Image (cartoon, rainbow, N blue to C red; front, side, top):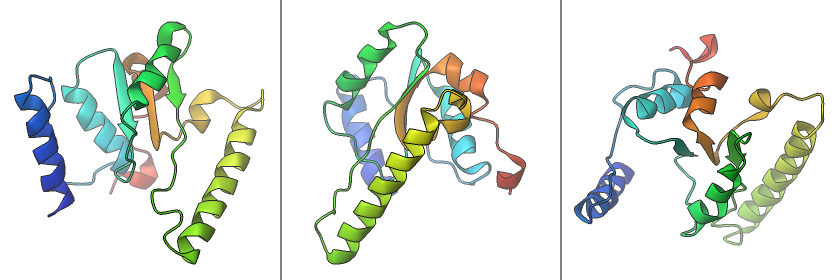
Length: 148
């Protein structure tokens, strides 16, 4: 079964239970991730937005571990760590997991430097943000490099 159908079926199941959820599939890739975020924000309601890369599978308690950080009004975004579902599948996936873990250690260490601005280091493969912060940061505006 295609990923699109799997996602649509899950959304339909939760919608039938009364949850305010809908499935959106863009037919073009304009703006790539920024374009997808913009399209989602055009129909989303609410103050908070969860952002996941297509290959991110959040654990069931993800939202409960994230949302409390927004009790502080100055928090605009919470970026969370992702892990590898297939870390131990083969030697190749173990090496890839080690390399990606190292990449995140270096990247997040650099991002925590006082001279680094928060908007330039936000790369939400998985995270949540206040809607107003996302819009103000310009995260929904495709860069000239991604306008194909």
